[in-house]
Length: 410
Image (cartoon, rainbow, N blue to C red; front, side, top):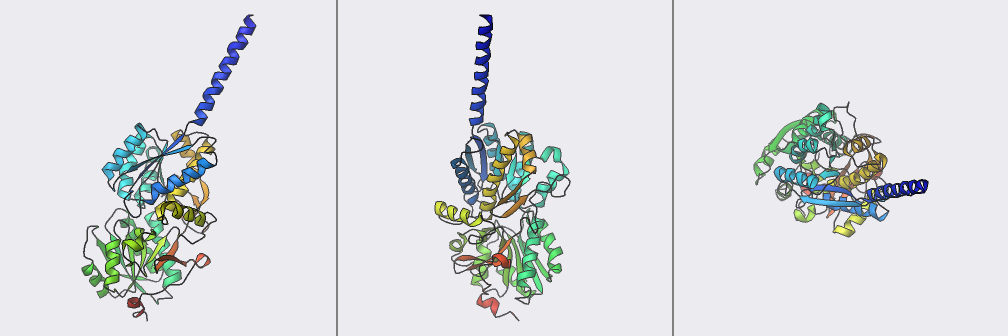
């Protein structure tokens, strides 16, 4: 009789443990999203994360666990973003956070990610300082992943595309750098100063302007006086005003570089067509098959949200997928185990092959840039569409110079 009771108790214990394990396995995976939901570039972030989560859930989730997305709009405010991070971790109990395209916001979130021990991935902020801070104090900041290219890498992408696609075509020999005054553009401009001459472009003017600038006439007058062949931009928070005035004032200099807002399909309407002829580097474009995933994602996004994603949308979508893969590899959402799994990411997404620099690299936890990894696409706005100009293997069209610029090309 005692033996039978022992077996019954043992069986009950096994059943209880099995039931607990099953319930635990079925617990949802909670991803927090903190983004600039009302901005041109940031609106795509929560949309892309939700789209990826829906797709993953439709296929059974991650080992049977569904993904729940909890979203907060930080209104482009670092203070609001910090409050959102505190709440999304303490109250909503998320296991990972995808946050912001603004470098100042991400830099403000980094100390809190360390205190709260929550993995945080930025799909759009560029400042070198994000990954440099991880490198300088890995033990503290290892929870932060720079899920986008650094400012240094972005500058190299612009120089690569300019050298291959613009220098010869436009007979360009000189350039003026025009950047908004922000955390991400300081290292960007420094890298431009270094790599543009190597691409065959002498820097003859350098202008940094306040994001509050309303009239760009004096800036364009100053640039025109230096007679550059190209204007190379570093703009993301600001975009509409300098673009519209470049068009309306018929500035006779081709504009290229980084324009975060120009990567969004809404930018044509935002500028009332003023973006016609603007060249810009991006991680992906709607009709460009960088990988087999790029166009299907874009088409699904357009169908669901009415327009193509910004660059940050592509990065956020991929971040959701490689995070899900990391959770699966780790077999856990425990922070330190998830960090270790994320560090081993080798994922081909919509933007190419995504891997992270290691802790011994200067840009720790930033996405690696280069051939066979993630690179960029040079696009141009033509008649309301984003056309890929470079690289040649994915190009969907040729450069069409605006009349004011064409007249000056020698």
